[in-house]
Image (cartoon, rainbow, N blue to C red; front, side, top):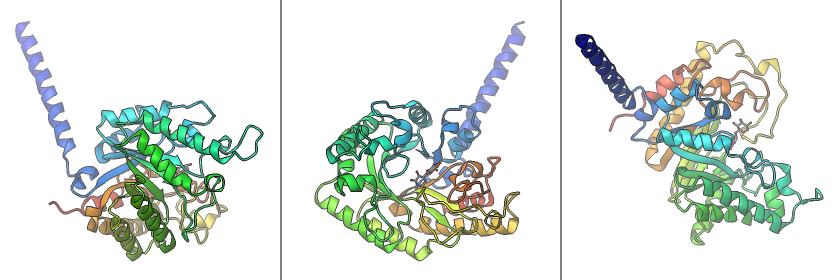
Length: 378
Ligand code: XIL
């Protein structure tokens, strides 16, 4: 009886030892993307509701293994967290933060002020007419203080204002701009800073390599810095494709933004690799093109020849990013696996896209294999 108990103790001990050893190894394995890039920048991903609210989601082990930063893909947007006046729903956002805390992850809040995914009531008064300036400012302030205040501490950064500019550098004529004027931008940064003085506050946009937008962002940031308006980071969304942006333009932009002395992050990287439905390189979620068979050619799988093209483009981008790793805080990929990417439905609905680093079965694809090998150990 005694011997039996002793051998059972030994088996339990051995089992425990193996578990601890395996966990230890996996924390530092060169096969982990975040680990391969630990001397370069954080490697992030975006989580959606299905992952956050389902502890058995197959995404979660992949996220824990390979990513050091997480951004909520939708659950902190105004239409989710604050769909109706005076009623906030923090269910999914709280679960996102709990997951990040449990796994010691860097966390980014996305996003506080945007023209998309914001409910119509925000911009209206009780009779359905456009709200007046004071009302909208007050709503903005309440929203920012409540949401940023709730996650003060665990969240490290916020995409405070999203897509406030056009490609040519004009202010986007969003309801924010029409009702408040351009001051809504600085107010948002000020209120976010008041609610969490330690959070890094970002301006985030697409096509950040267009000269018009770039010059305007630089001008706004300089103005903010000179007036003591808190801004700490520039987010380049990184919805990039096989033939845009030109690598030189990307590199020039990284240098120009870095000269401002702010953090730079690639905040939503994915690869537009399907045939283009039209001349468009942006990421305005309201842009839509008709579905056509010719522009959805890889419904049944991506041929190897095409996978090579896609992977080599990922490598080109990562070569640029790696070269400038001293200026880049984080590179976030906009989702875990191809099947869950917004690219399958935007800018054309119902296509089959391969824009991420894991396939529909959560297996790393050749682009992943290529970029994990790029960093040189320091
Ligand atoms: C996208 C999400 O990925 C989709 O699930 C959603 O339907 C629309 O928004 N720029 C942004 C992101 O800042 O929030 C957008 O995310 C993609 C473009």
